[in-house]
Length: 336
Image (tube, rainbow, N blue to C red):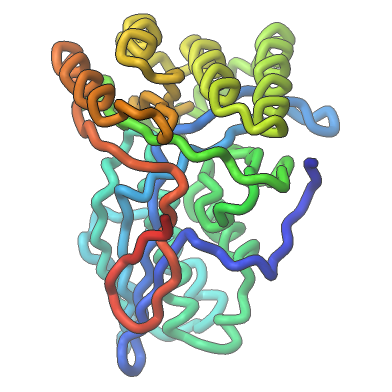
């Protein structure tokens, strides 16, 4: 069921693209909301932080790229990673030319929702389309390599296609394994557990590099990964949610989520299958079976129960509603 590598010919559903009439282009990329599972693994004797992304089409970033006579600029100016990504690819694809970037994002920053990865991915893709050939012949793997070079630890947003499930090495920038089945659909209630607190993935990775995972941590996550793979193969949504919660519990020693124990108990109280979290951030989500008859009532109750815990950015999303490619307009369409 699993193999390394990808079929590059598959249609992607992580973006919608709208080209300006002549010489500009824009691209939108959705976010994720933490991970389904995350933890340390050994591949070829090399340790990796492996994860499976929880897609969140409720948030996205749009980057517009317009040619400039000189210089590379970004509005707003604090989108430093998008600017770094632009400088990298412009030097490679069009040295001496300039570009003006405009970034509009609804993704909360510093919570583990992939805002930086989305910024860099949308930036590089918009510039690629703006320039046309030969830049436009750059593959998704080429773009992902540039995202990793510009950002450091990143997420595989550009590879999400709704047809497969990916085990990604976030800090090595490596695709560790591809499962030829999609992640079963969840209806999720996403939230942030500690409003105001942000986590730098780069700084956290640097800190954790000083304390490599122990053999006990590696063995514990290996058991979670086996359970996840079995649940994925048997299409057990309950088993995947259970693996997500077990993975999140293991991750508390690395990047604690405030009120995690209370959240795991609350997930059962409100009728969720489990709770997932970000490997480097404060994002978490209750995972529900979308086929549940009283789903709205459970979501309403979960929302009420989160308020005393001072949760923020509470929102609902379905993990298999993926933005589809659109060339005619700037409107996002949702595949259901």
